[in-house]
Image (cartoon, rainbow, N blue to C red; front, side, top):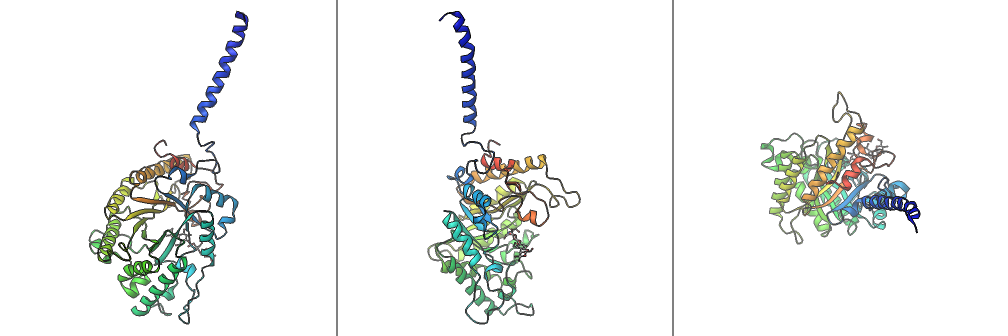
Length: 391
Ligand code: G3I
C-alpha cells in the first residue's frame, strides 16, 4: 500500500472512529435508554430502591384498566394509595344503620387494593379518622348536634375495627388519623396537644374529646397488629403544627409503649403539599424533629404548586418554562433532603399521576403540581426527581 492508499484510508478511518466515539459517549450519558418518555425512562422506584418506597395515588377504580395510567403506575411506582376510595365517605354505610350489622361499601376499595397487589405493588390505607369526607351519622344526631359520648365511642370502635379487619394482611400502613390539628396555631396552643385539636369542625373530637385519637390507633392495632399505624397531616413544615404533632406522638407513645409488641404510633405522615416558595429548610427541620421520636417518617402526599391562584390570588403566575424550572428545582431540593434523612424515611408518595388528574387542577387552581403534564409527557420535575444532585 503506497502513500496514495494511506492518504485515502486515513481520513475515512478517522471519521469512522469519531462516529463510534460519539455514539459511545451518547450511550454513556443515557445508560437507562432514552429518558424522554414515561415508558422508557428508568423507573423512579428502581432509582430509589435502596432508599425508600416510591408511591402514587389511584384516582379511579378502573385505573388499572387504563393502559397509560396503569403503565405509568406500574413502571414508576411500587406503592399505591387510594386517593378517595378508602375514606369513610366511600366505605361506611351512607346512612345510620338500623342495627348492629353495618353494610360497608368495600367494592371500589377492594378493586383498587386487589389490582395493586396483583401488580406486585404495596398498598397504603387512607384514612380512618378524619373531620372531612366522613358520614355525619358516625358522630352526630340527625339534628346535627353531637352524639352522646358512649354512642360515638361505640361507632369509633366498630368502624375502625371492622374496616381494619377487612383489609388485614393486604396493607403496609394505615393513615389512622388525618389532619386532627387546626390551622393558625401559636406556640402556646401546642404545649398541650389537646388544645391544638380541631374543635367544632371535628365530629369525633366534639362527641368524644381528645381521647378519640389514641383510641383510634388502639382499635386499629388490636384489629391488625402487623400493619403500621401512621398519623398524617399537612403543613408539617410549620413549626407550631410540627410541635403539636411531635407532642401528641411523644405523649401517646409514652402512655402506650407496648401495644402488641411496640409503641402505639408507628410513624408520622408528612403530606407535603408544597409550593415553589416553600422553604426547604423548614421541611428539613420538621424531619429532624420527628426523627428524634424514633418513629418512621412517610412523605405521603407530595406535590408542588408551581403556578396559578394559590401562589398569588390577584395576579396568578402563569405556567411556563420558568415555572417548570422552578418547580423542578424545588422537587430536587426536596429529594436531596429525603435522601439525607433516608434512614428515617420509609416512603415517598406523590399525590397525583399527572397534571390533568391532579386534585389542584380539578379544583381549578391551575397548580401543575405533578411530574407529568396532562398528555403524560415528562416535565423537568420528573428529571429533577430522577437525579436531584445532577439537576
Ligand atoms: O364522589 C363525588 C361524585 O359523586 C360527584 O359526582 C363529584 C362531583 O364533584 O364529586 C365527587 O366527590 C369528590 C371527591 O373528591 C371524589 O372525586 C369531591 O367533590 C372532591 O371534593 C373530592 O376531593 C378530594 C379531597 O381530598 C376531598 O377532601 C380529592 O380528590 C383528594 O385528592 C383530596 O385528598 C386529600 C387527602 O385525602 C388528605 N390530604 C389532603 C388531600 C388534598 O386535599
